[in-house]
Image 1 (cartoon, rainbow, N blue to C red):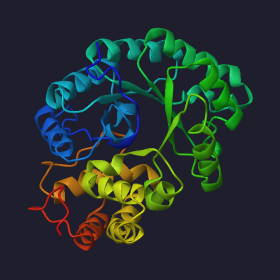
Image 2: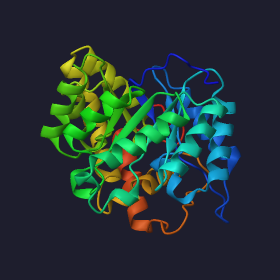
Image 3: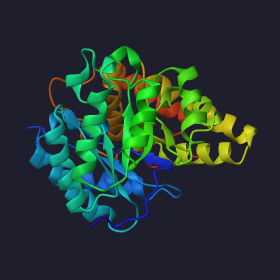
Length: 320
């Protein structure tokens, strides 16, 4: 049974990284230490594992179960744990959902199946079937991961409304639409429904702008490095303290620019390197096809950390 039965996906939710040994096996000790450090940040609403940030695409079923198990053991009853559901087939997604539910997750972050990338947007019944299959396997709250339309994996606005109506366990979307106009429309429409659906932004490259539009929270891999700054920014926006929000955004800006530079797929690779620079991971090993960053880029990350005011001693706590 989940430890947080009344969990509603809102607020600041970091997605943690996965530490690996040189042979690409999971470094559980370092992964747990990283998770504990992030979860010690005041003001967090939950933490996410088995997401993009932890290279879920490169982890098999047994590894995902292991990651969730040791994450739950580490976090204990301090925070709800959201588990990613990453699968190309709905039956495998349902198997992952049953596993996560039985293990004690508090919600499920549901990725779009890559099998829908070649026209699935034209067949809304495919999205409905996918989420209905997951919902039949678990009663946990579901978070829909909304991709950009250009990826072929984003759900059209009307399809999302149909999903919310037919799958009532959907409680939020993680919005990566990469479209500011659509992002604001979704915030205004979904959070005003008779059964509100939270919009958790993952537009960390323009986080302040997104939060000011009224997002209910954020779910971000960058929270694995700067959970405190993200939490403070979210609270400042909620308090309508523009000066404080602008000051925090000014500090976050150098890292946002560094993390989300081209190629975009290296964003979590860069976050791992930052944690090594901060002394919070022993090494930044990634599984192929990802490869280690060149020395020049690691030097740029070190400079971005310096601009933000982070040092190895400060670790995840921003220097005042």
